[in-house]
Image 1 (spheres, rainbow, N blue to C red):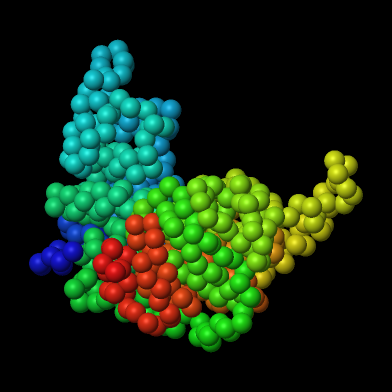
Image 2 (image 1 turned 90 degrees about the vertical axis):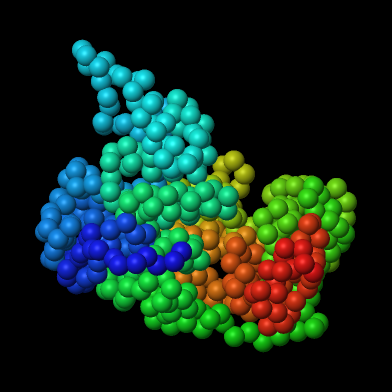
Length: 506
């Protein structure tokens, strides 16, 4: 998105500082946000982004510093006060009531009434339809929120801010749970908001979308302001250096070649399934093999077949040189195949459970005393195993009893990995394992992949970021229209050439 002309400050932060006990979350942060712009705020987990957004939304108050709104010092002491000043926030964890209608959610706590205090549902439906139309979306205001997709629910949250006459909208990780099509629609909504004069503060780990949708970018690191740039005056490598203090390329571990005589851990022979095939390839011990393909190319189908989620129509899978009938995930796990799924929240973790229970979920037999139905859980053994996994993966948590839902995205992903490492797989399928995590956590996951490969595991890796697949993997198989279109050795091709092949260009 091109940077706009002359910018007029709407919000100015001057020396904003916030401490939680001995931890300094924000340290003298000063920068401005212009009226009618999309202003991205980027940084690793722990950089201070969430704390700053909570301060602007009235959820937290700074210990020191001044917030100026249109030049006037303001105290945003409560969310109600922030909303009165025109500031609304749409958080990553949506706050809708699924059993109520769209209109009821949009007017929650601001219900319109007729005489005698009766709800004026007709007026709320009409106003909700108007707010949704302003976003360019056609969601029925009378539909139950439970019937909507995640992307549609997010748009309802945004419509709620419009109905409340918000002039400043904070979007905190708005696309982390969205499919590509829903993300594109969200970007259109963000542009429409900006063009309508609304100031959007956009918090995201995804730098490609930040550059696509923002006018200016601010980077925080360790609670300090690192810089603010117009999009046209910087680039992704510079922003990453500001976020982590080094180039992301430096995070990809140096790797020697996989020995030619390395054992084959997994082999696909002429596999066919809906949207797939025939496909053949081998994965060796100590190898990180990448799959690169667009949505619907067949990459997801390969993962589903290899983990027993989809039965092949033809062909076979060999694990350790022996034919493996993978009719279910249980079959795959028994054969030493693990899967880190694309959605950790929906498929990888029990979000309401603590770190302790998630980390040991697949190896309960190792933490039980006795056999059969009379076996009793050995709490000490379970805790010792979980603590070892947390230490090995570098999971940042206040304790093993912490609910995983309360961890950062990067630490949640480390718990998923810990769960699978406890099961000691021979082959690990990594489906977009850095999705929704910050660049620092990405670097840690790259290092872990390198370490696991060095220990002899075979890793099958795919990512929504082509640079990641090219930087990490020993070989890359480009998948298009259900078949392997190209095989590339590490360093053999650049992003543009791979994207061309992914699109079916050969």
